[in-house]
Image 1 (cartoon, rainbow, N blue to C red):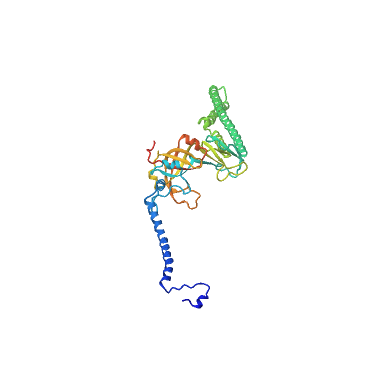
Image 2: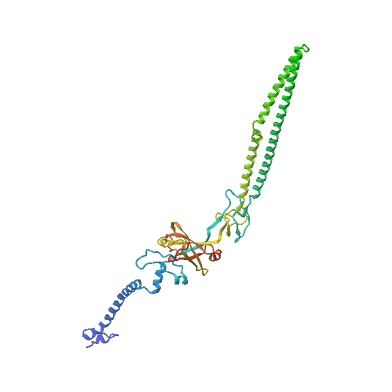
Length: 409
């Protein structure tokens, strides 16, 4: 029965004293417990799906593991050979084998890029003139630039050449003087010998006259003294001639001194010519001008005046992870794909590096693995691919080394 106070309330009061009211309240509680059981069942479903995905892989996931060399599970002994933001072209994926080695590479000329720097000893010289343009094909030793100290060094060469000419004339003059002195000494000796013969004959005649009493003793003494003087003159002339006749003209002391003076000025000329050579920047290799860093009027930059490379023979530098290098051999065919150009290049493994270093070709992703250990593998492009790649030095490409193929000789 309802009290009068209950009737005055704005809402109806339900009393749970009897069994009928309790059954009505128990139904919502049962539905609430079933929802909790469904929430607990979701992690079980996720875990089961992950296990099935690892061991019962769909075709797409299986292809991914074949390409990257990864192994399912908690970690992998074979890291991914490419940065995560690099997408392998579909054509390469379709022809790829499980044994293939994939890695990032860059195109470069044979022998890599050569830096053309200012010659040693250029000092504060500035670039006066650039003699070539980008794309020019040059032979080794061709002047590519000229420095502003060229005129000063050219003057030093001209002065050294003049000194050489003076010393050459001095040497010639010395040789002629020595030869003339030798001839004069010979003539003086001949003259002294002739006078000695005449004096000796005069002495013999005077003695004969003295014995017959025709001449005096004073005359005999005078003639004897003259004969002795003539003999001494011969001795003196012989000594003078021996100074020049004992050795050849080229070995005379005066000639040797003149030759040494000439050698000294020739050394000065050579030094001046080498200094002048430093005013011209020469091509260090036979190749193509790839990039010019300097302009007339400025000092040669630290990165060099320009870059050159033998683009007639292009190569590719592939970085292969150290755990995959055992599969790579010289002569194996290599396919290189440029995602930027949409082109494919062909080549073969030329040689394999001898050192293990850090990975240098990485993506811009800050989370990329920059501590990976790689070995350089140099790939030589064929003629057709090399001609196309000659315009794209340092282009990043994806390399696929077919380790299943028989290496070419």
